[in-house]
Structure formats: structure tokens, C-alpha cells
Picture 1 (cartoon, one colour):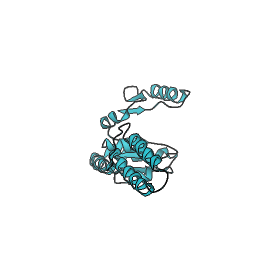
Picture 2: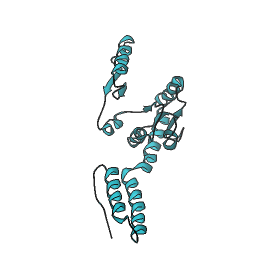
Picture 3: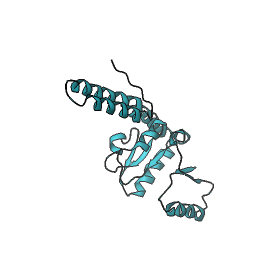
Amino acid sequence: RLRIYGGGDATGNEEAALRTLVDELGLHNHVFLMGSANPMEAEWPKGSIAAVTSERESFGMTIVEAMRGGLPVVATDCPHGPAEIIEDGVDGRLVPVGDPDAIAAALLQLIEDDGLRHRMGGAALKASARFDPARIAEQHEALFTELVARGSQGHGHGALRTALHRTRGSVLDGAYALRYK
């Protein structure tokens, strides 16, 4: 089964075209257009492989979320993201942008080889720890705490403290917990 998540383009043309294609090919019992899921994190563990076929990516949070769900990710090797997250052949596959045959081949490799898919999924879960929100928040907190300490002799102490508070809260999705000594 193939579950496709996302809202498509703003006009709805993309989703309509996909629905038409699914019907024309008689795949309505195999391909499911799920629409947007919020939060998506609960959906990842239901899958076996994630495919992220972006032409551009600023970081790749979708990739990290899928890896945190224990899924190997097949992603296009677009600038600024996937190659910084995925180690090709270890925890996922990187394929050229705009090459549907390469995407299909990488997906089929993981579909047909259960052992490889499970090894890559385990490696993906382990690798995703680098991007754990709590760990990132701690790194930001340490940086800002150091900046606050450096700036305590001059101006801007309050601004740095506020920046620390906001950054930690946004990384932890609203959990504003700070420790000051």
C-alpha cells in the first residue's frame, strides 16, 4: 500500500490529477491520498519507507521526523538539507533531483530487500538522535548562556536572556523552562 500525505498545491490541481491517475490505473485499493496530517509524527511509524522528493529543501524536518519513526528515507539530493541528514546507503538513499527512475529504483531496492530496509530503518532511528529537539534546545541554551555571561559586563544582557528564553521555547514547542544559576 502507498499512502501519500500532503495537501498538494494551493489550487488542488495536483491532488485532483493524482486522484484521476489512481482511478485510471485501477489502484484505488493500493494508493491512498491521505491529505495533510497534523501532527505527522504519529503517521511515520505506520510506514516502512519514506519518500521525500523535494526540488529545494531548507533543512529537511520531514526527513528527520521520518527517521525518528524508524524509517529509511529515499530523498532527492537537493541543495541544503537531505545530504546533511541522510548518509546514502546507510540510513536512507539520496537520488538526483528530477530523476523519477532513480527514485523508483531506490524505493524498489528497499521494498524488495527486507533486511536492508530494516537495517537502514534502525540506522535512521539512531542517526535521528543528532536532531532531537531537547538536545538542540540544550545546545542553544548553552550558547545563549555563554553569550549572556559574556555580555553581563555590558549592554544587551536582558536582550540575550530574552533570546535564550524564546529560542528554547520554540525548539521545545512552547515549553518555556529555563535554569539560571
